[in-house]
Image (tube, rainbow, N blue to C red; front, side):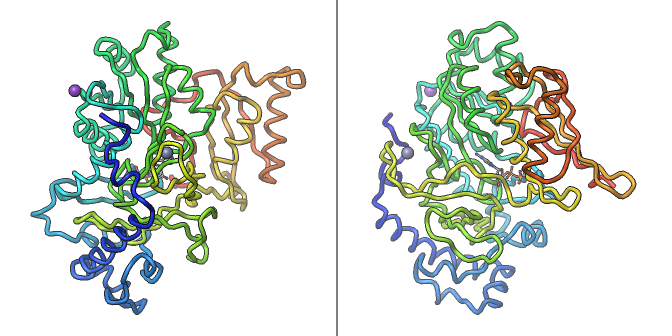
Length: 435
Ligand code: ADP
Ligand code: K
Ligand code: ZN
């Protein structure tokens, strides 16, 4: 097998890709107009009809869809095919509220699995590989997506799902897993367990990992790579657009190529909705131009990101997105101040090169917010100026105060006392939401 799963598409000249996208967009807008009254109404409100859409240059005329629309239209309001033609349902993990559901025809499943196959091949996969899928199976898209992609490539597929970490490692050794697919949190957890069991990275047959579904840092990439003796690749996607495989990383490991033959990506100003020029930081918006059952047009992901068309050393011409820099709705409001978990992570990363395990606990006592950050201790956190636990608490507390302008109670906790995740990491416990 070569370097690419679909060389013609992955390396297509940009001008040809634009033509392909334009043709598909025009068809897709008609399909949605004819079959999705909810979106037709949004178009009418904006004074647009399918006759106004001649190609991607007209994309900006279309109305946006948001998660709120998906919740309002739940469950069938955005469905564009009769249920008799749909073969699968998946649902979001519900990280930020009520779940939404997405529908797939067999054609949609094939498209999606081909996107995942591109990711696996980009990570060096072929039919000679043993692909160990430790994403959750079920409603979550991770397991099903990578499982399908692995079948397409012809890898020997191990549908492990998540959990039972020692058994995962046992299977990995017995069956010679070469590619591991799971969330980066779980990969780090598997890595820690491998170390605890006294297994050396070189004793494992793993060579690559495909990790996504949540934000992770470069530091975490290096840690996982060292713990497991692999190259770690990022993969991005969301249930609303099918699942993982919307974008995938190549050997350059410097951003993810978006599968532009299926998804048109835009970056917008999240406040004004204005489309921003290439290279700007803003909210990522996707239009699916090939999906039949759940074809969302201009879907606002709330993921903040930058797109680039700089030439990639892998030869692919597909536009690249950087690692999402947090979601606009990850934001917590604590004591009236906007706080992103990524800000806290960046403070901790300056103190410890090892990726920090931490949890933010917010509560409301006597009508005022409490803000605590639990941080797991590691040796790396101490230095010439920071010698004691008290020094360390003070340092973290001051750095947080400098960045956020509010004080947090810092609680340093024993290594391994913050629960590890087999899926997406739980960084925030907001007890105010429970009441
Ligand atoms: P939920 O929104 O409930 O978490 P999904 O499971 O569909 O539902 O998750 C999709 C979201 O996960 C994306 O919008 C994005 O915020 C995040 N995500 C997915 N892949 C990555 C990745 N590689 N890096 C950072 N964030 C990611
Ligand atoms: K095989
Ligand atoms: Zn590349």
